[in-house]
Length: 358
Image 1 (cartoon, rainbow, N blue to C red):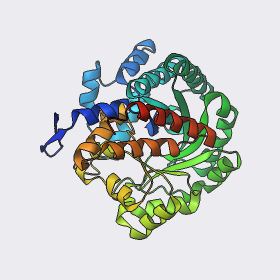
Image 2 (spheres, rainbow, N blue to C red; image 1 turned 45 degrees about the vertical axis):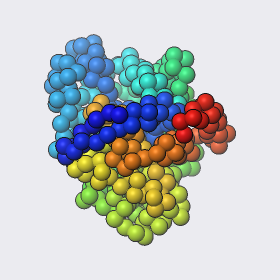
Image 3 (cartoon, rainbow, N blue to C red; image 1 turned 135 degrees about the vertical axis):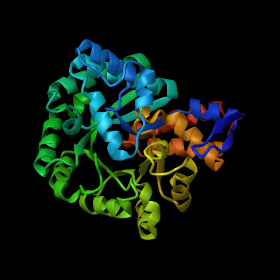
């Protein structure tokens, strides 16, 4: 048994066997921001590019990553990525993502990058794309895991900028492994409706669509409805506020639109005081299709395993619960059906070897 302490100071007990099971089980991660970069990688980029960060060591970085709310997080996030300038910077960030995937037994990651908000006009799109392309190839060769990307629209920009992003991404779709178009950044006050033309263009060109919505209390379930009406998303990123609207919950159960929930991230930016308040399991029990994700591991100081472990501890999840969450992560990924089945076969084969534990 392992002792853990909740944010409220309450002592909880984690079954060591279940923790090891969570660490080893094959899984996918569907809500992960590539732009949230390991401080060690950022410090190397800063040195290479003769730039400075607000911290000099990884430990100082983690101390600085203390957020009041989502807006505070976004502001600090933009400061850190300002040191990323070269193809090598982006290659090393992608390769580092592969290391994290291998360590956590993540077979597939669909990482989001927000070019307009984070990298333009400081870095040309082709520089970013070249680094990501080299990185995902190296990740596959070195770690035998699949790193894909989503290009996120910055919802605070103009509809014309959103359209241009979709157009500019098209030539890189296959070579960089861009499987979807997302919708991201400050949620409150920036609805999806004005960007509908960009969503339609993305859909016409075969991209999957997902959107951040219903994360903050102020956004509420209304933000999820607004995205559904204007985007018809294949996945909803966050969507935790859906629990406050019974009709919305019923709709999500009926349609089985997956939610890519990020429990510990929501706690870190003070959407909830404690993991025990997060609605992941409540939504699942109502029949909503949920997946568990980390969001921004370096900034939130927790990874995918941590999120599984914290949920399992707070809600007394079983081995079977963990298997079902891992299975959902593959079912909800943006892959062709035959590829999904290969991931699921890999999971089933692994479970056969672990059958004494389930």
